[in-house]
Length: 470
Image (cartoon, rainbow, N blue to C red; front, side, top):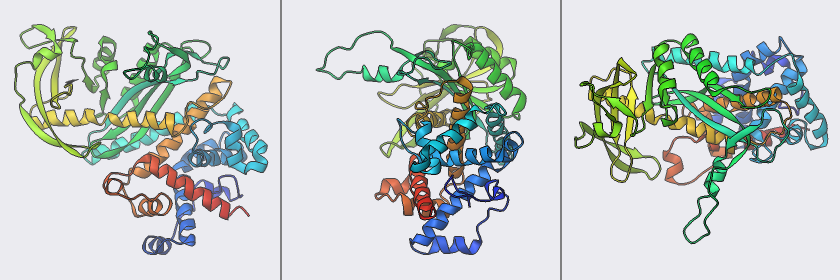
């Protein structure tokens, strides 16, 4: 079994070549009641899942690094999942204590530092690994008749207390913006945008209708220093890579922040399908060549179709309407586009979705609307990375070392998402019931949240390693 730094095991087990659980043990695990031995078997099972998930990557990493650093890499991913602390979750001294235990925290910190400082490998190895996994999954989705969706979003990593680390630049603080929302009866906050040290972040998540998400690509860059890159360069490189490497049939799903000529130009240049939320004040043309704002295409016109959906937040039924019409963009009048309008009801703003997918029926229009609704998955991934995985807590001086740390976090998040892709399996049900029990209909009827899964893994692995550390 995998050890996470507390016990020495064979390297073949770390690579996952012979790590299998007998069917009789699994049947006993799922059928019997909660007992100490079963819980240890359950923790062993998920450590084996992590070994299988990282198996091919560790084999590739073994070509560049010493086997001790390869083992440290595997243990570090497990320690990141185990250590749940928003402010100190990625501090090397804290992770070193989880790696070898508090009495040997200094030695554990040195091992992690040696892994990050090694010049024999770069963060591009993890990028290629995530990309290759996504390519295989895209082909599986296409074979299953599911349209792959590439969910785009961008954010920032804020480091307000940092000053001299490489790659820091001025970014708009979302935390400062939230803190300025003073409730009625309190003093008026200062105006203007708050900027803090940090760096920029753009990510792509692979998903589809009725399937879970997985990480495809993560990019961080700065506007100053050695890591200086222009936003347009990052955008062009990512779109070019997606168009060149990924199989045909994927659809890019983008929010209003991506609306504009630069993104449309690249989508048309590389002949990519997209669903773009169009701002209501941006202009489009109808088939007669009349240019007008997007909201004027629906004013005074009834919905073509309606449907009832379930609001997952308050568990209520909500009626939404739909309308679509063929439009053109003023700069590319030869490109056939469709504006799909979703009307969520009173006191809710409609969605204006611009797409170059063929929309010939109501069903096609509903598929566009529900595909854009899946974009919420990448918002959840970003929030999970910042809050639960403590992505803003690492204190590293050099840019390349920080990128290695960030990509390892992305690998840990993708592993948790990989467990959720199979749904509520017997092993996950047993894990949640034993190590993160919750009561109430809400927890029993909703899908398994990634937060609860990580908490259960943390409890199971911590208990298992304590029992086997002597």
